[in-house]
Each structure stands twice: as structure tokens, then as C-alpha cells.
Length: 246
Ligand code: IPE
Ligand code: IPE
Ligand code: MG
Image 1: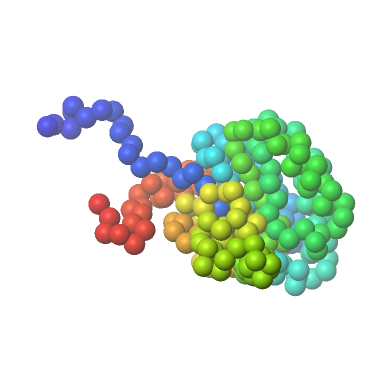
Image 2: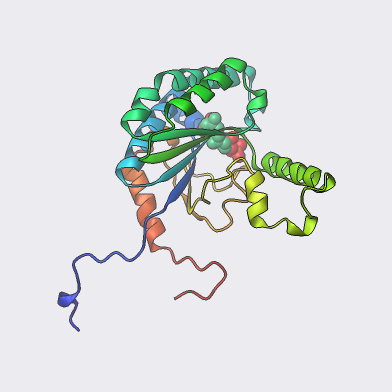
């Protein structure tokens, strides 16, 4: 058969259904411009807006963004306070834009350590975006995967001790129900910006079979075209899940 008789542009590899991003490099972006680190975080928030819109336009159904880790509290108090200020600003001012993008927001992380007004704003933002259906946007704030796994383990141990479930009945599905990401499908593509090639305590359980794409671009410079390139790279990968492939 000649290739001329093939249908035009057959594309057998589906795009990623869930993209997770470690948004890194705000500080270095600012440093390169001799600006304070907070200037990089501000531009980082602009990049978040662009990427949510871009991901929606590219038909990505689920997007998860790592915004603040359980380890980021170790940064200087001023920087933590700037980041919390930006988060407040984001939650209060981005709802219309999220609505325009059909984005349903969910915040993933331990809320106990967050200021009360932020916890309230998170709940409000989740409620007000909950009927949006184009894209699910999960923002990870005070998120750490080891912390998440320990909590899940403690909860299951308590349930076993209370006689609610048998230890032998704890399977992957039961464990996943205890994770902060319960109900969210595993990411199939994990992107990290800024050239670092590590996972930094992000979605350790969930990324068991994610494809990793590391890009040198600093997060404030990351745009829709970079997202498209990462998706193109993902489509070239052969996912084997321990099998022998095709
Ligand atoms: C990512 O940028 C944002 C957060 C972790 C909150 P960084 O602040 O880590 O930027 P670099 O890594 O110092 O350049
Ligand atoms: C990971 O970036 C956390 C977020 C992007 C929120 P970090 O900049 O905190 O990670 P390390 O310290 O370089 O591993
Ligand atoms: Mg960093």
C-alpha cells in the first residue's frame, strides 16, 4: 500500500489526560534581572494564568500545578509572606478568569498550616468554580508527598485498629482514596521547568508511570508553546508499564 492512500494526519497517540507541572525558576528569573525574588513570583503567577488558558485550549482535561511545598516554609520569612500574599491575591482576583477558561479549581495540600482567611478564600474559590467543566485545575499548596503518604497510612491504620477494614484488604484503590488527590487520575506527563531534574517530594505515588519532561525554561518564561512542545515530546514516548511494548 502506498502512503498516499493513508488517511491524512493519522495520530494514534493520544495526548496527556493529566499534566502535572513543577513550576520552578522564579527566583533565578528575578536574579537574572537583578530584581527581588518576589518579582519572579509575580511573573510566575502571570505564567499560571497563561498556562491554564493554554492547557484548556489544547484540550488537556486535568492540570496540576505545584505552587508551594511543605519544605518551602524553610525559606526566609519575607519570601514566605510574599508567596502567601500572592496566593491571597490570586484566589481573590482570578475567579473570573478561571470562569472564562471553564476551569474548576481544587487546592491540594495540608490546609492546617495556612492562614484562616486563605483557607476561607480557597473554599470560596472551589465553590465558585465547581460547575466549570472544561479543565480541572489542581493547585498544590503546602503539599508534600511524604506527608500525604504518612497521613494516608495513619488513617488506614486507625481504620484497621477500629475494625473497619482488614489489613489484607488495603489495596491500591483503598490507599488512593486516602490520598489528597483522591478522585484525580494519575498524571501521565510531569513537566519541571528551570533545568532541575528532580521530583522534590511531588506526587511520589501518583507519578509511578508518568513520563517526565524537563525543560530549561524558567517558569515565568514558560508559555503555551512550551506546553505544546512538552506534549509533542510525550506523544513520542512509548509507554510500556513494565511490559515489552509494541
Ligand atoms: C518556584 O520558583 C516557586 C516556588 C518554589 C514557590 P523558585 O522560587 O524555587 O525559584 P528558584 O528555584 O529559586 O529559581
Ligand atoms: C519545588 O521547587 C516546589 C515548587 C515548585 C512549589 P523547589 O525550588 O522548592 O525545589 P528544590 O528545593 O529546588 O528541590
Ligand atoms: Mg526552585
